[in-house]
Length: 296
Image (tube, rainbow, N blue to C red; front, side):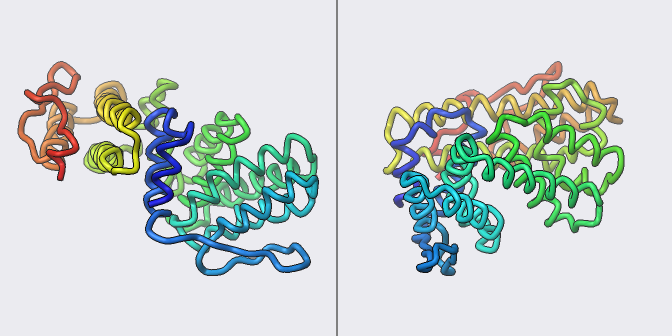
């Protein structure tokens, strides 16, 4: 599983758990098959159905050789057209390829303009409110990654607020991607408007189990695996606490019943009966959260 090996040996494993999750999921999917692409003699990007990694290598070579226009063409193509290969290609498209594009933009103004134009296009599509839920999720996720890569995450939250004001159905589709950010901003009432308690609790556990599972792979260095599992524990607790805070501070009806439902989902998904919520805090677990071995 070369994708996992790269993760284990890279600085990416030093990231916060949320970022680790994004990396390990796409790295795991990448490990299922090799993703390759090619460029024709004119330098215009073409891709095989196998993927994008060789196209990324070609773009990197263009960048190193100062062929910035050709590098920009490839990076733009990868970000827009890589979607046709689904989430399997996201390791390359949203990872190293996007990082290369942002680096290129720092020395080549047309690349900066390309990124800006794409951000504007994605925002426009979302704010029209005509996208189907799945398409809205894809567009918002791409916008989120672009904004994060160039340090404009506040723009992502602004777009969500605009959706909340103008197109609630689209806002509902993309809400899970900004829930924790909204909580950090104290916007509990907005969260309460869109929160699905059972879905959010189940997703929090799924994130936890995914990280613990990947941490157990033989390709992940032991010290990194332990750090990932420790951070998975903390992130699960944090995610659950955010859900509880939304229930309590967002004015949701029957908060006691909703918090009991959160605990019920966690116990069911983790196959335990020891967790409960007391005074707005997740409590229980005589042995703490399950280990990797206990999840097998």
